[in-house]
Image (cartoon, rainbow, N blue to C red; front, side, top):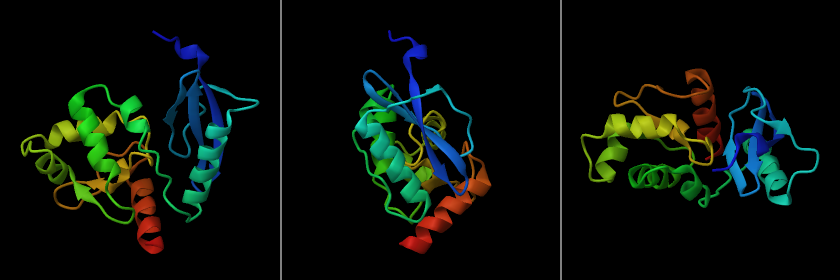
Amino acid sequence: MRKRDDRQATRYETWLGAGWVIFDADGISGVTLPGEPAPAAEAADPPDAVGLLAAELAEYYGGGPWPRYPEVVARAASTSFTRRVYETVAAIPAGQSRTYGDIARQLGRPGAARAVGRAMATNPFPVLIPCHRVIGADGSLTGFAGGVEMKAAMLEMEAADG
């Protein structure tokens, strides 16, 4: 098992504050939402792929295209169910949303809305696996690490660009 202290981070800047792309010897291992503290030592010279993702995230928060990195799903998922949730959520188009129940039904597990919520709560790649696009059954903006204000701002930004 890899030690956590070999992780490094590269900053990306947004109108919501700085966010971080986290990486280790195996590649990109996570992304933070803007405004979170650095989760690891800041890299002096990050790999090209890390720098590219940081630039794409900054561009996204500036109204640019949603960065698509489907390969992170395999690294993020701890179980086959979580992987299926992440794959399903990663397929939600920018500017659209689905409920936790919608995702559960799409996976053939109509009673698993809470399990979908738990998977979203452990998502190490917010934005890339767009958990901000998953909403409550009544349309409420619930369960987002960055807070409901950030979730609303991100959904509004995507709707305006869509």
